[in-house]
Length: 137
Image (cartoon, rainbow, N blue to C red; front, side):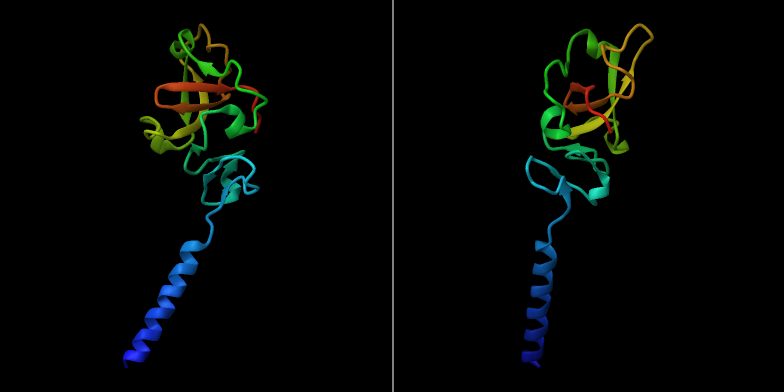
């Protein structure tokens, strides 16, 4: 009886180990840049996961393959004119501390949109927004 119980326990440990070591899909799967875990590769937008709404870095270049990060940081009047609406509805109250969220630009008023366009891809980290206008789906 002890031998059978031991074999069952050993089998469970091996099965659990195999399950835990299977890699969760990452965006992208080639591993050339930092990426984030995702539920499925079909939920990836560049190196970000749309399901979680998270990106690997607060950089249009690293997270979204933009040519560079020049002029992407939204400061001053820009922050008065736009919001970045996260893709993940769970982040509408703000991106989790220490994380980078992906969303789209929403213009606050009719006078301008901070040099961006409604619908542009944006990144949020804390209270800071980066507008990645050169990124296309």
